[in-house]
Amino acid sequence: AYTIPWLPTVHQLHDGRYVLRVGPANTPFPADQIEAVKAAKRRALAEAEIRREATLDDLDQDLVRETARRVGVEEEPLPFLARYQLLEWENGVPRLKLAALLLFGRDPLRWHPRCGIDFVKYEGTQREYGARLNIVKRERLEAPLARLIGVAYGAIAPHVRERQRLHDLFFVEHLEYPTFAWQEAIVNAVAHRDYGVSGLSTEVWMFDDRLEIRSPGLPPEPVTLERLLRRERIHASRNPLIVRVLSDLGYMREVGEGIPRMFAEMERNGLYPPELAIEAEAIFTVRLRNQPVYSAEDLAWLDRYADRALTPTAKRILLFARAHGLFFTSRDYQQVCGVDLYTASREIKELIRKGVVQLPQKGGRVYQVLSTPEASVLQPPEAFDRLRPILERQGFVTSRDIQKVLKFSRQHAYRVAKNLQQLGLLRREGRGRGARYFPGDRK
View 1 (spheres, rainbow, N blue to C red):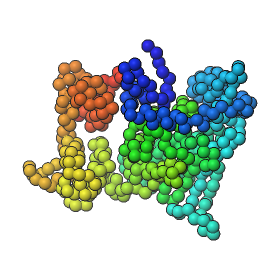
View 2: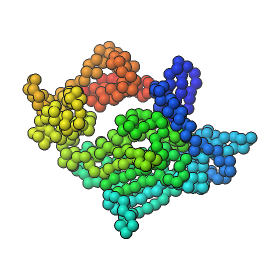
View 3: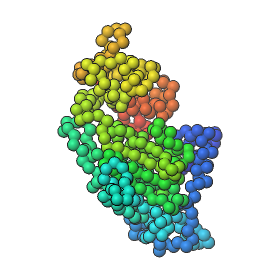
View 4: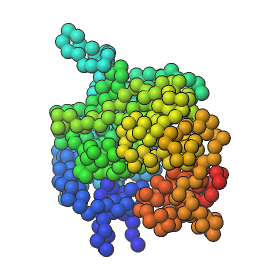
């Protein structure tokens, strides 16, 4: 047996399958996307470029030692840089890669004139020019990348205003943007930008109603705008050397989790989901809006369903029903949530199983929202019913049991287990492949 260190690289197994290392597990990778990954690698040359004119004296070696300590490695700069593949040896002479100079350089701008972050705060909701110029603050944040993320957090955080919300809401964060969302957008912009583009900086524009984080370069293949908007858990990096260091420093989360969690945090706080866009065919933009989707009164009313793991569409139809005497029809669901008949039927059944909605008249077409869901019985979904024999026989189920019984992929089985935990039907003990799921408190 042998182990492979984490890198955003696809590996081919002896049986012909391809896998991508994600966290502690190997995730199957579609063979038809291999060529896209190869194309991305051919373009990802900037950070790995050898700068023969650079020497170790061009690095802030104290910063290298500090980084080594933070990642739990007690090493001097040279072996540490070699460990992270930030240099190559040439006739016994260490040659630094551009990634090393950007991460730890005494003067990183010498190696890339726009490697910092431009933070611009505007008054109003639009950029104005000339006599109507509305810039109230502009700051160029320049530091080695190993420090730049922390510098950016410290410079921008004071400008993220507190929101006024009711005290008893179930959303606990009171800032106009969830901390995870705006910080994740910034670290992604720095880590994944195209350092082969020397004329553009990473930019953060703050308006009264939104925050825009702009990163030079397009998403690296096989990542596409469409796949990100579908919240697929996929990862590919233009700058794997930089990403590895920033990940080990704790700035970046589990591979492929950042964008989906950014969406979840915005929605959990009652805000519109992030907007992703490609501008001028060269800049990847994340736009976070601070206007709440629902009013404070709406959020307070939805609080009674906080333990039912409602989706954004479910919240939308509940608020529609609240304005219509707590009643709605399938046609209402389709029009309000923008879904087809079959999706509406499936999601309404899920709300009934969660004890949030009922059909007062058998065979009827009008559904009623239960104003006191705690008094209703949360019916086990079909997946749990099919797992019940195994739970009764051995006292627990594993991810492999879920895959076998429901004939799901490993990723789909993980999502089913997570949903059943949220419903209180299962509780997890252990982590990774050793995790076991025991019956929860809700029967």
